[in-house]
Image (tube, rainbow, N blue to C red; front, side, top):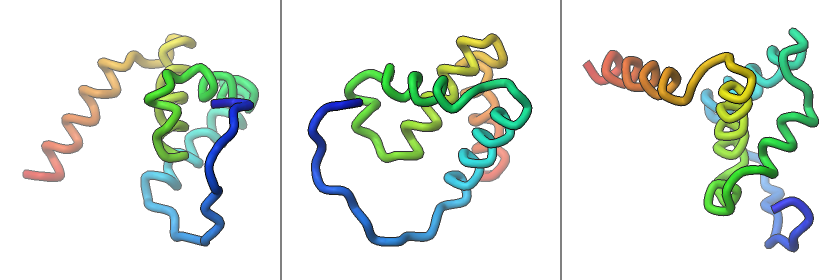
Length: 93
């Protein structure tokens, strides 16, 4: 967690997954429209529970963004999870 000692950093280049690119685009769009600031995202990431903070980079970002959306009243976690379930059903069907 922020400021604590961490393990080795993986420096190898890797292709970003489509959902990782989407997370990056969402963060940029929210910032460009003045709906969030970089420091808010950083705070939300640092506020994650220890078990969530240990998740991979973009999973932390997505969890933090969802927390910010709820905090700001944009969307609830239940709304996002319901939409994700709809999309998953459509893609599997």
